Length: 404
View 1: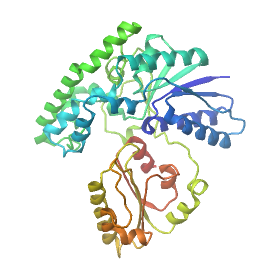
View 2 (view 1 turned 180 degrees about the horizontal axis):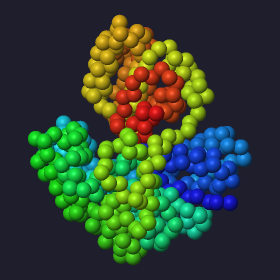
View 3 (view 1 turned 180 degrees about the vertical axis):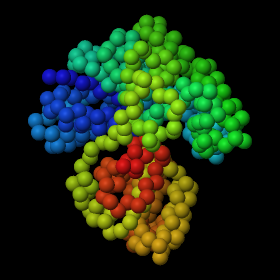
View 4 (view 1 turned 90 degrees about the vertical axis):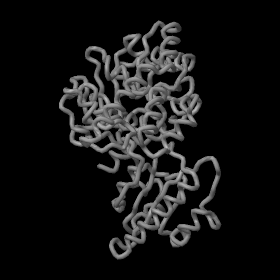
């Protein structure tokens, strides 16, 4: 009996790909034993995905969840110094100043844990490996403590990433294409980079490299890890620039839907899209399916972590109204399902609120639904067949769900 340990962050953007892979592995071999190492927020999803996998594959075994100690990635990000400045920078209109401000914090986002937190996660993972004794470990490309443990202790492992091939291979393209061909993250520069914006893109790329090489928090954590564990720090950047000989990285994307690349390293294997199999909407929320089937629907879902303030919600409501007005006579009966995650201010959308003042008539007519959470998985909503447009935050899972 083969035992596979999947180590992943608990954020959906990373974890959904791993849940999908676990389902597929069990479908291929019902006797395989699936183990997950992650943080508490994803434990219920592992249980529900395991139950669904067993429904789909006769004789499949339940999955085992192992809790990693320490804060999960988003908890560590929120505890970082400068988080408020980062959130403010992300909301600014992209320009040279705001883009360089975001770039200066990227490395901290890729490695948000401080030294003690990093070591805590590392040691808990080692205990899990000692207990499970897996045949192979599949590691999230952003779970740095586990990447470090696997490399330092020479565990048999491969890396799985929901990112694009470009994220791993752009810096390895011939003729320095990273500088002049591919837009810098967060710059809002189009692809291919227009000729007149190439100097700006080159300058921003140099800033990106500078910030990556000089980030103090990364150097501090690296020093702590080296002293406490004798291990060299492994991050997402390490996977790009210093992969182990034979280090296999599976990327949940494919060349046809990625940025065009002149060269793809042999250790990168595109194997996507990797879509998580989920129960149909009718099995989870039958009334919602009946509403979706009333007519063509726009589905607005901006990700798990994006919180929207009241003024932004009002702007979105205005945009929804303009859409519905424009659709009259062109796409009769158009309706909108809007998953709205509010910020901490606690504003409402009921009678007497600013949002209701814009869109209340459509809410009363049940032509627009504003919900805090959609019970079915987003991919299940899209599979109903009446969703004509997916408005999302551009995350890999949302992109692939809409594409397929």
